[in-house]
Amino acid sequence: MPAAPIEIVVASGKGGTGKTFISSNLLYYFKSSDLKCVGVDADAEAPDLALALGDYAHIKDIKEVYESRKASIDYSKCTLCLNCLNHCRFSAIELHENVPKIVEEYCEGCGACALVCPAEAISFREVLTGRIIVGTTRSDVDVVTSDLEVSGRNTGHLVYLARETAKRTYPNIDIVVVDAAAGIGCPVISSIVGSTHLVVVVEPTPQSLQGAKRLAELAKILNVDYSVIINKADLNKDFIEEIHRSFGSKIIGEIPYSKHVIDSYVEMKPLLEYRRDSDISKTLTSIFDKLTKILKVRA
Ligand code: SF4
Ligand code: SF4
Image (cartoon, rainbow, N blue to C red; front, top):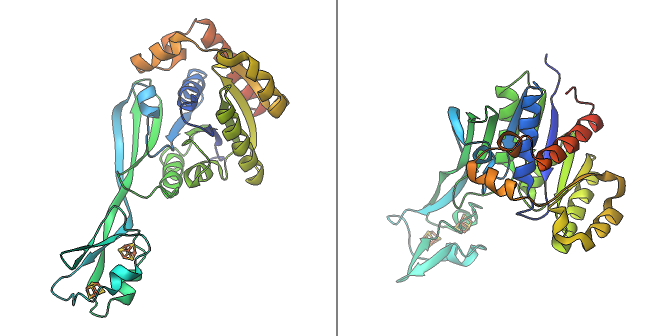
């Protein structure tokens, strides 16, 4: 049986901090070191890891996931008693000309309306929650994407399925890099739980530092070790000391703001591919070297 892969989760307590920039380049770094790696895009509401790696050049599999249900009223049975409307805690039933109507966007599928309906007029239908997409990007990195359907419930289960799909589809993989959603909600917990290491990406702003501290607390609760990378470090030099006071030796590097990063996004290439010899690429590589030493990865 193949050994379990190292799972590195890249997360930030706040959106727009640069975690996909770190994830895509980390994958490209491992790929260039001849390690077998796969990326997991766990930001199901706004997946863009594959895009940062040039988009999918080849799709291997798309699996639809149905795990939500919505109520539906059979008006041939309905007696218009309005019990359902009075018991729906999610305001998902509205009255239109004295007739109850289900508002699907708000329906949580809890079943309360069906329980109180004397006419057995309410049934449920399964609805699409999202998709798990497996494929290879133009940068030749394999990526498994969790892609939430609009109005689908983002419970974290899609993330669990994406992580499991990655390990099942690529059983001999050395490393999985999970690009987590922003914040510390269920999808982020699903990304971190059972992983090997968390990389917290923080930028020098109070909001980002606050989010990063909450992530570090979460990592401790989930018993996962973590490192910190400061991105756009030179945008607020006065605040860097504050981050160092908070994380000390957990900080493995600082990345300055660079126009090359924006250009690489526009070109849909990881920076290490797009501007391999730039100073910022050298900075990134030395940070990733440190991470591989911490994780004792053969690179
Ligand atoms: S299933 Fe629950 S949320 Fe949906 S309409 Fe019925 S009571 Fe409201
Ligand atoms: S509880 Fe049943 S019978 Fe009463 S209004 Fe709702 S669907 Fe119709």
